[in-house]
Image 1: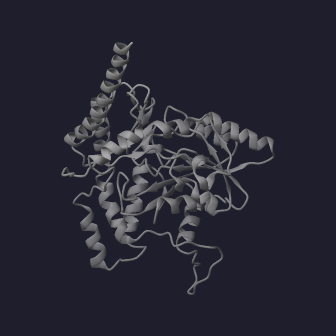
Image 2 (image 1 turned 120 degrees about the vertical axis):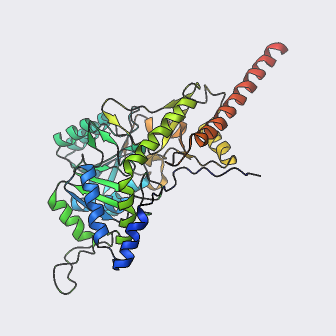
Image 3 (image 1 turned 90 degrees about the horizontal axis):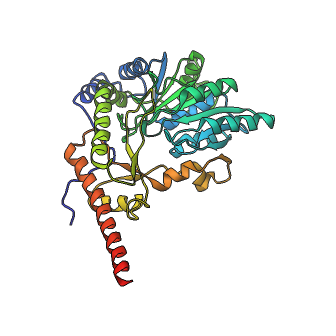
Length: 395
């Protein structure tokens, strides 16, 4: 019978600040998708990321959808999308009737491979087509190779949607993730480094895009005393109550980033010496918020222990872990779409595991996770050596 406390993958971590702003919303009766908390939360995000314009929305997915709509992506268009990501990066492409083409990862950051991105754009150009947008993701908080990707996008005149849902607080050569592309997207889902329970944000330096996004997010209501609609709109605006949670969370964001980075360092301290386990390191100029600590497990060096075997063993000890995102080209819903691949996303999915990384984790809890992993591998290696020795004796 399991008696030890559950260790979750990435639970919410509240401070004492959020309740103050929530109570203000109730006292002032701003229980609506507008109000002082919304305005202040958007200003906090804009100041932190370093962009001029932000609108807070119901989810990161809604922000991605509005990014595509405001950039003019429509029926029959082609959008190049990172293959190794959560499906929400790709679903809105299909909402718009566009065709996703998936781009494999490079192994340095696990994000979109600039070489394959260029190849896809060249092939489209040769066929007389042009990509309507590029969706690049900062996976698990690790910045993508944005200098190369932005240069390639500029060369081919394609706007970049920067999916920074997992990467608030991460930086690429001093620029905050979410503020580098044509449009940036954040998520404040319950498992993110900071949360509003559910929510997201649309970020840009382009006033035309933000004005259009704000208009669409409030059911495209015109400036008339009656309801007048020229475009199909969406009910995507964040609640003033949830924005109050966001205000409190933004105030302690740097602390949460530091806590996650310390958790990553603790995992490295315990596991780096184990043959067959590797970590993703930051490239020069990159700063990751380490939203989740991820590892690769090579069964050929761990006595046959796989990522799934470790996940199941952790679960038996009341510890939550998770496989790496299953690549989009392996998802049945996207099986008909083209991919430019070197097999890296599949390789990472086959060997990868996300370890519990909540910012409230203690050093003892990290040690508990690592003890389970080390014990499992040690037993497997011991059994393997015993079997090998037994074969020698029998000969």
